Length: 157
Image 1 (cartoon, rainbow, N blue to C red):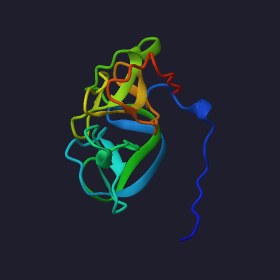
Image 2: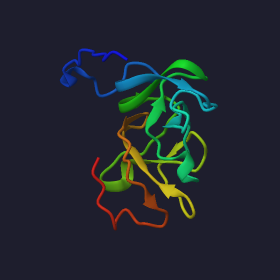
Image 3: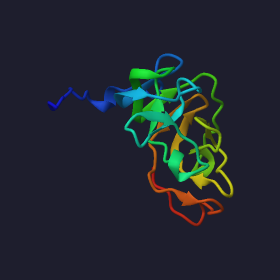
Image 4: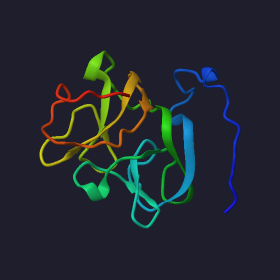
């Protein structure tokens, strides 16, 4: 396999909000997706076979979320955002200081939430709200046991 390189543009040129609904900007890869019923914006993880499936917080076999789908459907050549900004006009995120704007992997397959999952689910911060319909996706790979208060743990995004 040959090493592929791309030019990384000055990140100061990146607008705070992607210009259109269901778009993202950042570092992404093209992969084979086996399961994505949620569509664009689905929380995704790399499965044992190397392909990507929807993630959820209900078990360690479906977490952590390490990407967001930027393309609907399944098959080869689907774009997955690894880190960056995503806009979905259907989202209604809460912004604010501290944990108010945090976004978590949901116990619902493929979904994100601003309410930390509870027992027996895993707790993973995947980003924070920039506006009501834009999030900065920056998945944290440390997963907290449910019931752990974020006040007990310092979270750095």
